[in-house]
Length: 256
Ligand code: 6PG
Image 1 (cartoon, rainbow, N blue to C red):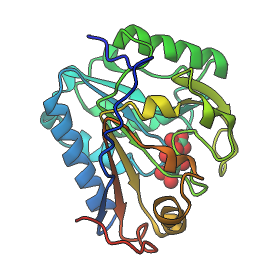
Image 2: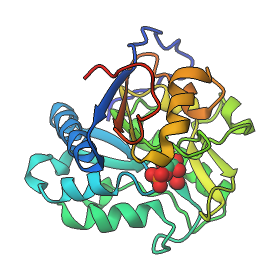
Image 3: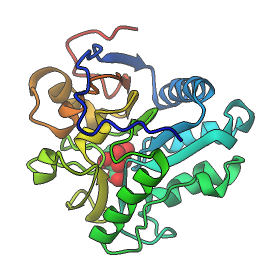
Image 4: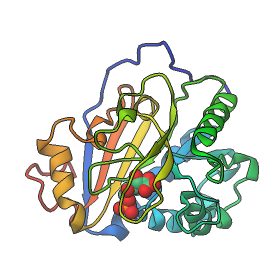
């Protein structure tokens, strides 16, 4: 694996304007996300992707699982953009959700699954994950081909939460955090913003009317107040896939 390291190198700020695509509903949003995933996976060897957690991407994973031949799984390497610090068989594990919806149904070699050790203490898990990234990419600051992200109702993404010191992390690609959000596990391991912003492609998936208010604030009125607003891949593409319900309060029409 040749190094994709960006540490110490000024990432070109040829920021592409964010793409904003609105789909009728979660199903069509997930279908569009699968189409993009497949296209990117077919174009890269190896294809390095960080899956997102929560509930929104489950349908995307199920769609990919239903068409195993469309993705060259033997050359895909799967990571997670964040993980809850729980065992891999815990209901709150992002790994478990992805395993059940996708990994158990596709011919992805076990060595290509780069799971966060959620069963370890958070700081130990974070440090081990940073080492795993460096070992795989051959550099401490890898450039993922694709990072999937969701949007929390408070504007968080991955496990980067509002007013968290981790938002200012510039020295480490991975951090351990504690955050209370809904009834989800509080101890987490997360990609930091510099790692996310080094990606070739960042794809947000946001669905549901309950996200309409935060989508409008993140995309139109709140500047960089929210963690999700600070996802700006300087040398990559940023795409927001929204369903109509989540886009319901946007003033500016989407590009599609
Ligand atoms: C997590 C996720 C988190 C998620 C958002 C949206 O570990 O919880 O990575 O960032 O993407 O909270 O979650 P939903 O898709 O369930 O709304």
